[in-house]
Length: 463
Image 1 (tube, rainbow, N blue to C red):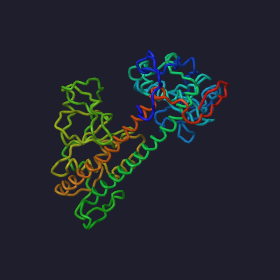
Image 2: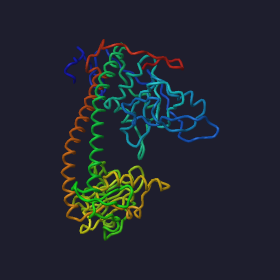
Image 3: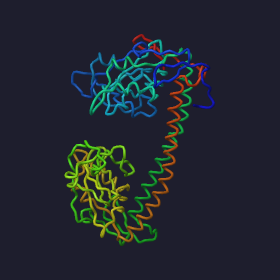
Image 4: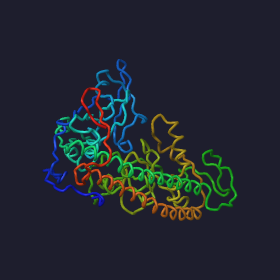
């Protein structure tokens, strides 16, 4: 709890484990008693006999969960009756009603401005508070993951989860006096904006460090470590000049093995005694494997798609196309069909050198050029095989790897420190929200009162 803020003088048991004790004079109500819930039925299709609209279909992608008119949404069409019902108005609270995981159910968003042409999309439910509760307070309650656990627990599904209108309406929310709600809103508006500004600054710094690291990698794998070396034209536009004693070589000429696609098997088992089954979803942006997504394949299947130490896996399709992973351990593993295995000959090219090349700006440019020429986001094994990279002898490759390993370690320390700071700030933000909306801190008479709005349909709801 924030040491500068005091608790209420008296508390009582709320009767709900996820809320805990609440101030003695606070009460709670089901959502249907304090707000109007409407589940959108507007899909992303466009029909000739309907009106052009723009859909807001997800809320978890917006920074700070605030939806503003300048964001880019999805184009679709809708009937006039749907537009009248689901047009986004200032003061509305949106939540996700279906998602791939239960924890993404109930993610809230706050509509900051009236949006004439923007409609609540089919993945969302729209909540319009009545005169009994201020909308911004309800939004902050939903923003607390502990309070939102009740919605997560009601989500049903197997491969995709959803929640019914009835379950949303029967969820329970604390309803203190409106004067207290206003004070909580003022407090959280101020404190969360301060925290979000700090988080934003640190995220910008991380972006700058990552951009610098990519630039250093690019310079090193195309120019080497000697700033005085004589250069020559590589003959490849996006590579530019390379040291005179280097050459440009296709990947397929650096291996005694063909590029090989992975197994088209579903990830059903998580037996730690079986070979790991590496999928695109297991790979982090840093090129590591996620422990929490471990899946395995039986030995008789895995042995047909082996991954050895030094093998490089290339993602071949979708949003992650071009992403790479180098297997650094002696752990027996296999890999999935959306990945392509490449096994370089260590006598010609060290695996770590090729892997670092795939972290360079020129590799990313090659990916983008390849996708422009493709009808779908896909890069085949044949295209990867013909990828040209600048190459020096293995002795110099080793020196480049050593330099980049040390540089990565140094920058990783800084990036890890910044990420830990961001995590702590987010945890502090979450803690403040929970303590405020459940009365763990006394915020009576805090700050100025926010403006109250009146919905176009006649029911008052707040901002």
